[in-house]
Amino acid sequence: MASNIGLSVPFKNFLPVTGTAALPFTLYFLTLSGRIVYHRVKTHQYMGQNIETKNQPKDAAKNKIVRQEDDPLNLAIRAHQNFLDNVPLAFILLITAELNGGSRKVLTYVMSALFAFRLAHVEYGLYGPDNASLGRPVGYFGTNCALAGLSGYTAWLCIEEKEALPILKACHDAGINFYDTANGYSNGTSEIILGKAIKQFHWRRSNLVIATKLWAPVGHEPDSNPLSLSIDDREAGGYINEFGLSRKHIFDSVDASLERLGLEYIDLLQIHRFDPATSPRETMEALHDVVKSGKVRYIGASSMWAHQLLEYQYTARLHGWTEFISMQNLHNATYREEEREMIPCKLPPLTVHILQPVNAEANLLPQALKKFGMGMIPWSPVAMGFLTRPHAQFLDSERGTSMNGTFMGQAWTDTDKKINEEIEEIAKERGVSMAVISIAWSLSKPFMTSPIIGMSKVERVREAVEAVNFVLTEGEVERIDGLYVPKKTIGFQ
Image (cartoon, rainbow, N blue to C red):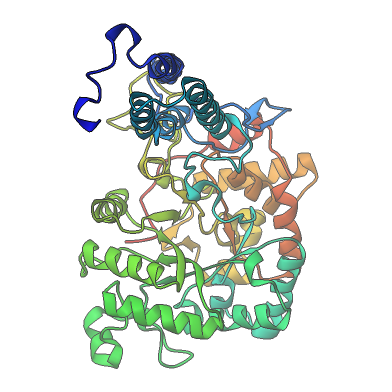
């Protein structure tokens, strides 16, 4: 029988079921191809954010997208792959069955059911509810992180445990479930306090997203600050192999953070800075291994140049290792330099960029975070308090005085003060605090996932929660944006 398969069947009757079934499959495949062509023709920026997807929630007042969805082009391409999964195998089985005398009626029913199933699967994945996906990047929505985060940075600013615990409880009671800290904050004390809160208040672990960082050395004494030392002095002071992104330090840091937190795993492990002394291959393989070990769920990066992030990401992609899903960088109304390379958005006014056409102000550049589907969780969205009160009042405050009139070593400019005054004016017009306006401005950006806010009082928690549901008008956002003037890059030099 095997010797004459395919030869004993008359040509005019050759595979009638297979031939008929191939027609709807082919037509639907061409329809999917047409979608890609449509998206390409619709706009030359088909990989940018200016393509809207179906079922995307909008702010009715502004008729504006309020969160970023995946590019329809990418969805259509993945739909091709999804639709063609197992289809060649199905046709091979169908041909074999038909050539061996299978019932044409039964085969027709089987093939029709297969086609209907694949079509429904693809369409449901393309335009169904949010939990139906053809591979939406985790970075956009993370693991259900709330829109406001709590940073362990507050503990670094000498918030005592007895003060920090009520603030943490207020955050959790308000629905905040994303908590960010680091091994270097108060030499690990921040992680210890967060771990105590989780245990003391009996928080359900599965509802929490715990993020921490590594790279910095952790002081051997509570009041020591090894980060301020030169590399030679750190090594001479007994900190050799206790900083950076070597395989040894990554493994040791993860174990130490888990012990301080009192947890079995970390949801998001972030590298605090780029480490020029360690190869990206060693770093990314070690991070991949801690993920595979079960001690870490996801990995992220923090303040660095875009080309450094790409070096890490492409190294991981080349070897099939775990990639970063998030970037924690400095971004607020007075500092928007991350918008040059890292964030897919309009470039700031007066900024010259070799990739930006002269008359393409509305174009959106698919930059580093967009390229890898990463979420953005910026630190200092209120500029360490500068954007929460009138600048004269802030500069005279205890915090302003301790900062010596600077932000990360850079003096406050006249432009910064004008932005502060504009936020103050809008706050008065809307009857809310300046903090609400500053956080709402951050949340108004389509590339934003979860701004990380350091809070030293329970009242600050209420302001952060209020800002989540507070929507600025386009005009108000433009009033703030229009004042910005590019400045020197800070935060990770």
